[in-house]
Length: 72
Image (tube, rainbow, N blue to C red; front, side, top):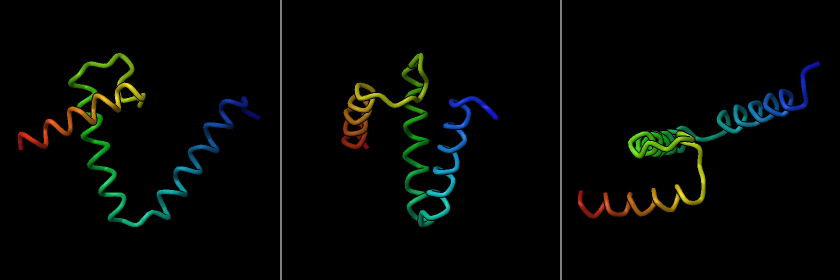
């Protein structure tokens, strides 16, 4: 039997997979575009922790997104 950490990761993946199976297609496509935008922004900003979500990064992203929308 694997470690507790490995088991937790496996169970979390099962939960995510099940949630995605139950999610309507239009919701998935909406989420996917936002996730791609977040990942691209994090890469451009050069965060050491990549696209891992934190409160500070979410606030910066929200500010950046609002500025981006004003200039579009």
